[in-house]
View 1 (cartoon, rainbow, N blue to C red):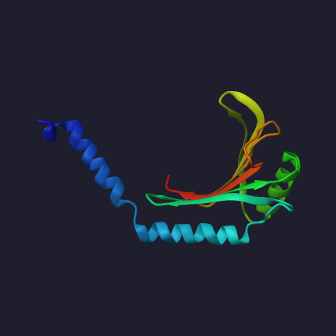
View 2 (view 1 turned 45 degrees about the horizontal axis):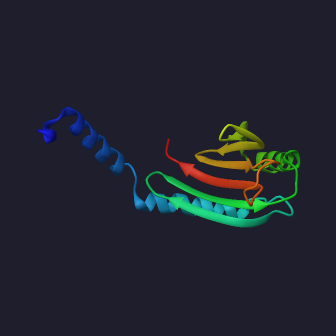
View 3 (view 1 turned 30 degrees about the horizontal axis):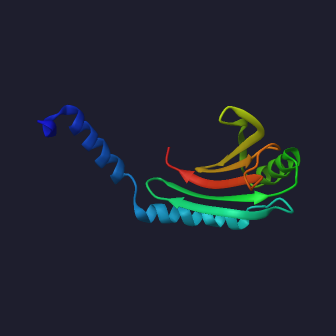
Length: 142
């Protein structure tokens, strides 16, 4: 019988334990903090917002926005390294991005301060996505 299967019982126990680790009140508080960070976030001059999204629940809270900008990746990187490190953020990652194994020149910067992270994505000079830079700020339970 399936209800007595050790795998089924382990799955059910893991699901119950995972669900009990997250509370809607904590998720709301984390999202409020992410929104506070966004309100103070330095925006590179001339960036024009083209879209945004918000996601929260089950141990995560995330707000992301996409922008158009003619600025080069190096200029934007220099701006954010300078401004964010002054605010206590640490640069923890920089990497090249590929789109389905195609190199469109995309890059990504990752910053962390406490339990919060900032990701700045450059689509690449060859990309045609309707946006040039994506910035996400979030909290995630690790």
